[in-house]
Amino acid sequence: MKPLIATFFGVGLIPFAPGTIASLVAVIIAIAACHFLGASALFVLTIMALGFGFWVTNASHTNPVEDAPEIVIDEVAGQWIAALPIPLFLSQTPSSFWPHWAWLVALVLFRIFDIWKPGLIGRIDRHPASMNGSIMLDDVLAGLCAAVILLGLWFALNFFLN
Image 1 (tube, rainbow, N blue to C red):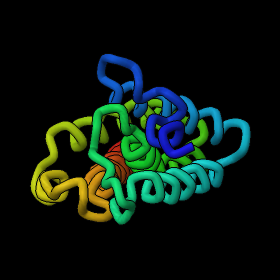
Image 2 (cartoon, rainbow, N blue to C red):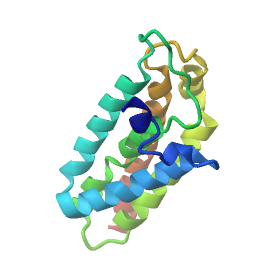
Image 3 (cartoon, rainbow, N blue to C red):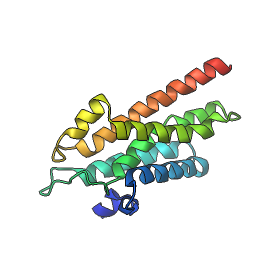
């Protein structure tokens, strides 16, 4: 069960760019969940990904989990964190093109922070995988940074376009 969750149902086993592919799949799932189940579905998915992600990568087990490329549940959780502001956009600007572009912007911002790993994100990533939560925390922080910038862009667009 843990390998299935860690690889996000096999997405992490794709041989090229598994983190980016997992982020893209996460965006597609988030769009579908918001469309069919409502805005709160993304929040529920995010909490589930965080809970399962920390459980799967918890290093307190006898065999510490390495942050191997095929482990992509952390990217999924981080991507969903980055996209959390988007339901707010959908409810506030229903006729605007921005909410639709926001999904792509969230994807790009998260991947930039996840790959570049500036500042604290990089320091967390460099901690040994045996440290509890280190596999998940860098992606959580990357998602938070992306979400903050996404919110800033939304506020700036609303300020300048209204």
